[in-house]
Image (cartoon, rainbow, N blue to C red):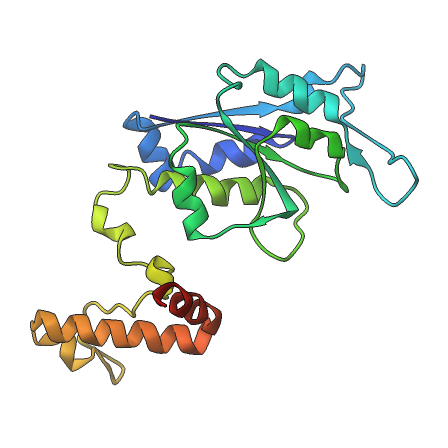
Length: 230
């Protein structure tokens, strides 16, 4: 079983999402256990305040270190869990990163808000992750991205294990195009090679499509792939 604890100011955003689809089914089947914590509950302020103005001045409010650390320490097994801070200044997230995170049976995801974190929080975590070069209002969406991308890679979570073997970013290629019935829709036909049943020809066609699509949309991945093959 994978355990994921999420520290957030908006628990309902997380709770609603994890009850659906793959994450919901994984919990019902006992393969995933998600616990959501509102770190506002760990504030010592009588108004449950968790942010304050930044030293040195500047716009916005900064999340305080104390409520988050108190929340972390309240989690059973936190000493051995892998603790992640979701922040735009973190390491860019990718499929290989998700695979690496599957080695940890217990993840703790910390969602930011306001202008940012008190930098001293980094002394209590293991890594910082960014899901892209843009800024969100909070880290909840990022936490859900990380959670789903990791959980789906665990054995038995997806009904078809091969689903994770032939998809985008595997081997630094985007996934090939898919088709299903009807064979013809408003003049658009399913490629003939896919209807032949010739497995080798289909394999070669799909590889060619992967290379073509990656070259057009993500040439940076091909550069990365070529470096690995040298």
